[in-house]
Image 1 (tube, helix red, strand yellow):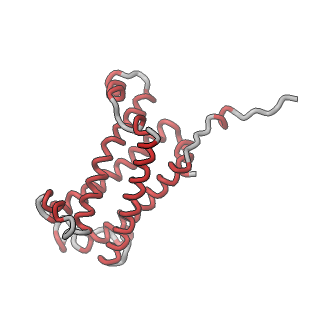
Image 2 (cartoon, rainbow, N blue to C red; image 1 turned 90 degrees about the vertical axis):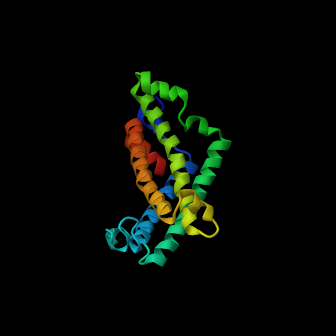
Image 3 (cartoon, one colour; image 1 turned 45 degrees about the horizontal axis):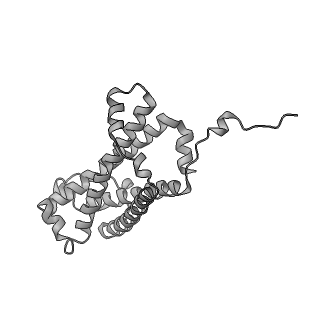
Length: 200
């Protein structure tokens, strides 16, 4: 009687490291908390149009009022920032950064490559590379609003308090677009099996 062997499908099941799963879960939770609490802060004094400007529906808000929104927002900000910090140290120590960010070979693959999957990997690295300065800008501008007296140089760098608010607000849709692109690229490469392996 032949011994049973694992199916080809089972052998090819993607498997992500536990640290990668934790990183993605913490990112999603902290991003949702920051976005919904940030919209609560926005409604207290809209960036565009002042107090009479358009406001977001209460369905998308967290905190109940300005003070509550700030508490949630800054708590989630530290969670998000520390999560990015330890993951950055992880990929640096493990030298995974060599496979995370765009290289000359990736740009060449996008221009001249014939392999569709190779192009998807290259686009993924482009997305990873572009999002890093955007995340840093979101965190730095957020710190400028969190402690304007201590970090007054951030406000001075951008010219005014209103400019700081506009820059911080503008980073949010860019991060949301990155999440969507990141999801779609992963889906195209590995399907839902890959997406499931990242979280479960």
